[in-house]
Length: 265
Image 1 (cartoon, one colour):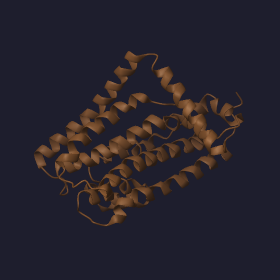
Image 2 (cartoon, helix red, strand yellow; image 1 turned 90 degrees about the horizontal axis):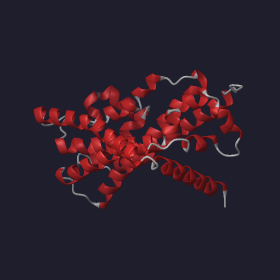
Image 3 (tube, helix red, strand yellow; image 1 turned 60 degrees about the vertical axis):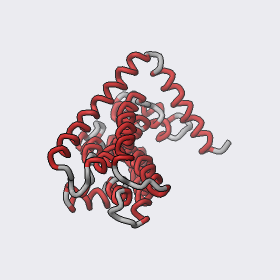
């Protein structure tokens, strides 16, 4: 078995262990799942109240905004579920656990990725799927194969983008020791901004979220293609371009490891 295949097998072993441990307390797990569902429900209500008052936002109808909201929420939920190890990485550095990670003969990134699995975050994913079940037929979109592909790419590549933001969050901890809460503007803030098409925040924000933090590539431009506001096939494929953002994320992680000094514990 090659190195990549072995690491994938190891990662699935991590997942299996986390699932078994969390299923030991099923009632607690279900309560956490329900709590996560309710947490995002308030955001959905805020959209409903706004659209009930103004009917459209930057020309987008309620059902079209729900498509946008559900895709971003699903992407963020997947990233939080599987990438939580990077989001809590400052704790790993602080307690000296990272020293043990480095002496193991496996990728440090893989070990951090597999260190946490938050299945309760699936409560948010469940809500996103329910919203999609309403928005898909209500939006008036003619769901051809390319439109379905665009929606899937929005969710999958969006999850990868949010994971990349978590890696940046973790990578900066090598230099600051404690996590920089300001980066929540791009993680949790990205989820909040993604409630509505990003054009509503103005050209400056849209350009920043296109060329710096490419959230618009997995949200706004594919949404234009979905809703028929643009027939450019490139907009359907832009979520794949957003994956290039993972390259500087990986480079920052490697730079952080070279900078790292043991806690001595």
